[in-house]
Image (cartoon, rainbow, N blue to C red; front, top):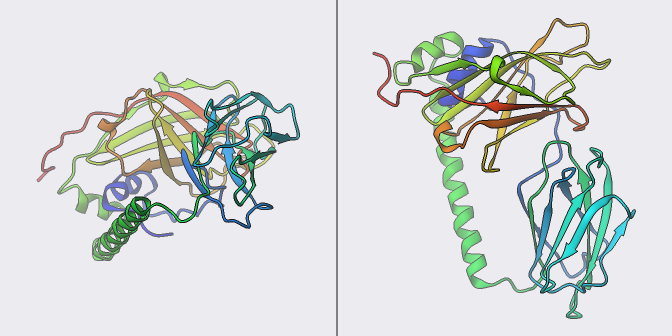
Length: 314
């Protein structure tokens, strides 16, 4: 696992000290906006799209679909679905009891007779994250402006990678752990606040939250939780997301030293992101999930302390 940037390093060094954090198991890729490019021979292939119970997902097509030829297998697992009036979109809402890992195959047919004539997608249940918008592209060749936009995005990504590499190499020359905190505090102020008394705990939470504290400083935020596992199996956080009052989501990195076992008195989980807390419309909702997404922790009314945006302590 690559070391975090200086902003996140400051917060997490305070939280985990010199302990070595274990890398969480991989989870399915779930993005708020998802893109699918169909090839002429992709009839039998089905892309996976994360969906959430009682949460709408909209497929947007660049070619019209046949409104009366949308199929779902198995049937009866959606509370509602409807094609757009022009046949260029499809809206689906899974039922409230749609389970993590559950799959429904949706198949659409295109109206213009071109290839591919149809397309299929797997709606894969996820307890915490679902795609809000899925863009499906079928026409070839691609428009010139789309190719230019993708080239510009690729160049920007390369520049970002180069900047990240330079930053990481620079970090290797600085001290780590608590010494790293003292080193970085010469430039940055850090603020923290107790959260536990104000949190709203979801009744279906798989773990009990005993302590909670939020941290913020210029361009970064973090939350540290102490969780107790009342279940029968160990629990390891595999992903986390923070949703603000406008519905905007921020994907969080997760640091956890070890799995939280039922026999433990409690374990710590720390989440954070390179995101200025002032950009969020908090109070926010924090969601964490394990690798299979079946046992989750949802906490509402999360806020972050104000921080002085100056030159930092001398």
